[in-house]
Image (cartoon, rainbow, N blue to C red; front, top):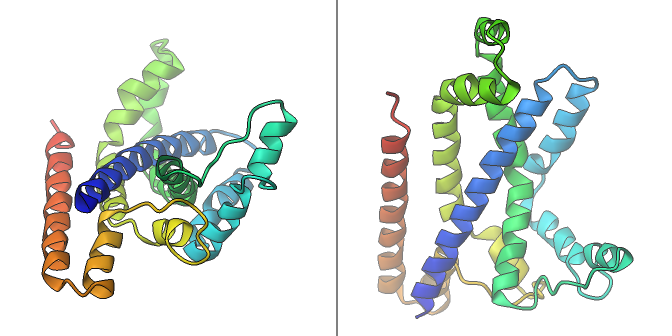
Length: 228
């Protein structure tokens, strides 16, 4: 039962974190690559979370998520909305961890997508402009297809990293400083079985399952991302 719960939590975390981090990373990269002022400032602000250490970041976010005096709940009360128990139940704790993880990795995805956008020849956009294509049509028919290799890379890296999630889950929901309801994921369960309860066989079995899951997701993405 514990393994099944950890497996479901890991897959849920991976799906939502990958989806939102990739979409938001692409969106910010697209906006940053427009002709706007202070572009480097915006890039720096969005990228800063990537270089921060996860443990202090999680502790700060735990303070932001606090029920009584947390900044987020204070803002919600200020605009007339009810407070949210971000870390009081396993489901909301998982949502909180997902939010922190998305915020942490958006900047990395943005930089990778920015490199891909800068390598798209401008003549395609000029031809589309002459033909009267809308901005959405240009993005859907030119930008997205030409970003396919970059998108595949970002998706594969994101899925692998998210399936291995451990630090933010452990800090925010497991440790002595973690005030949230405990959330189990595959790596935390592997750690507990192998190095807390010394059930090395069960921990090794879960490690093999995690390896197979990573391999399966990677092969599926390569299959779907294959250029036609």
